[in-house]
Length: 352
Image (cartoon, rainbow, N blue to C red; front, side, top):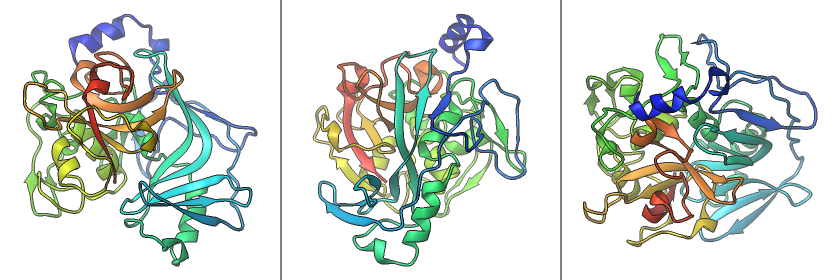
């Protein structure tokens, strides 16, 4: 835990340390959910972040129509009334579904909130044109539209400051307040500070045969790329690579994720500040060049959340200034636009 983060905590009472509230706006009482997903056999610590939410079930249409769009190539699913239900991008596994509205808040570090009805989930394989006619598609879509387990955005919130811990049946702590890694690392060098298996405290063998073990002092920590691998890989099952090599999955570092990993470039790296914000959708990986002295190379990454209450494009990342995952503004506003440090360093985006 960094001194900066400790000092921030001193300024707030315990009652105000509800940093990752997930507020769902609905019309009728149909469900009671909590801060995070508790797998079968998992235990969790008592938390002031657990609370009731009320939502209305999202109706499943009897018939859908499918529309093909370009830049990027994708299939948009609409219901009988013409409302967008889901968006599937060619070459990507992430899908944005329309569900009940949620508001994400991190009040200690920003007044801005992100309210969205977008839910981001993974399909079994990369999307191709015409997949809607295959046998797996309709059962998957109907199930996904009614699914209330944490999606990509929900899982990211389970590692913010003050997030409650949860353990699985093997007593592995798989969620809860994460730090950023060794104190000597900064946001320019943190891509090699702490991977997901170090947060977990586990030795790991990757499908490509690479073996890794946690470094000393990294338990409970994830750097920027390690956070993406923790969320998409360990928690949601996206393939992970053991090093910075080309292959199917997410490599280790931010620059390799963009240059060598799976997925579809949504905003290509043109060597300067990226500003094609209208091409983004929640769940996209966003990439930055923060080290202006180290040459022109991507060295930082996060996950796009969407438009915030101030009409800015906000993302979440793990970084040293906040000592862990945050979408707040301590140590630099978590914005792709607006003229701050991260917006000036924003270079590219990818959909995996």
